[in-house]
Image (tube, rainbow, N blue to C red; front, side, top):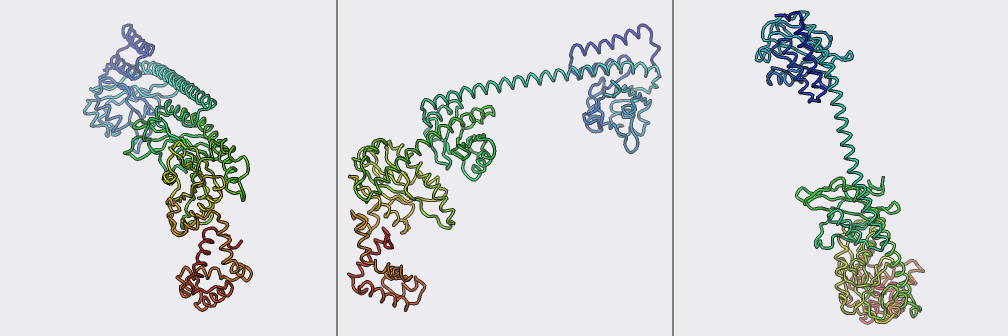
Length: 622
């Protein structure tokens, strides 16, 4: 069967069909519906049983049925998913569709079942009932867009007139398809621009919100709000829990205040690496820190830097609800203001500790009466030295298995923790005390009047609070005598330092010790004038020390080993790694120089007391 020559009626039908396709483009019907309209119109005008609109896949490797008329879903799926029509020629050649697409010419196949290239499609073709095929390319601006494929259930020889008429509709369909593609592209562009505009508006709104929050925080900071108040404002704005730490991990404040048990931020080597990563770039950067799967949410983490060095950490936690990325900007802006609050806080503490250190130097280091003006300087620090104060001294315990450089670094870090912990413990107790660092010691003058907690309770709390931040290190705290007069403080300092030295040498570490814990040493430590003890030790052992210094001998060490070994020459020899005869010779020399008899209890007691004083106060070599 062939198409008849086109008369006026047939021509009008064709023109109306083309007009219907173009009208569909103008009506902005969906692209898939447009392809189905082209297929159904072509099938109706060409007298075909089925029709398909095939378009090249995005990778230009195959042809896919995108619109159809009369074809079953199984057939469409078989062609598109299971046996795709490849555009390039295969090992045995190519079928009519790929030939038509590549050559940009119509290709007719009267009997598809007799075509060896169509054998792979034979099950689908048989199921659909296809006998003849005509493939016509859809060409626009010299490039193929796809194919218009007509199928018949009966064998059909397509005439040249058939081909010309289907080519005519194919050309108009190609124009319609191009117009539809451009229309969809423009619509997509409009949608993309609308989305971008909405995102920009949302970002602007978030930026305005962040600006407003930062402005509020800065105003509060300039009006004197402390770190806790600024952190509370951030917690309210982000509806979350806030934790602020110093650079060593010591918690400075938490918010909101009504949170009785705020969550604890993650710790470990990963946090240190995030801080190092942030220090390589911007001064503040927000990290999301995941925790264990069974935990109640994740954390936002911002390392805070001042003058290029880590100064603290800002944490945000919202149980069971993740943070939206839009909130990161709010959090980062908050960190900038909190950095200012940390700077002011640290500056205030540094000034206070410096003034306090100067005050303690004059109070504890004077040889005679304390200089004038000490009481007034203490009052400027809100401390009344006319009321009794207990001397408390803390020092980190020496870790085992560490190199000397590591120990010095660890001690410096630990002293920073101790300073912060002292201030935090005192603030938590509502007590204003004097505290500062002298050499390796953190010195605290604790007021001992009611209703203040007693010094022993404060010392225990200090040890507990600082311990989690010492990375495995421990501290010892010594509670010394009570000072009622200005002249008492220097001696109390010497005694308490000696007490903590003695406790650490005796391995009474990670503990709070008082004078009562030190046995007979307590009697020596409570002597009002330590200088008298030193004079006694020098009067007993001074000649021996001078002899060692002049001759390069070790008589003092030999005497100390002899007394520690229960007055046994062999025990002393073992401890000193020398021969017993050498020890015996040295002991005879010691008795001659000191004019003592090491068999007499009185002489032994005198020597033991002198050695104990030297162990407590040193100074024998001076």
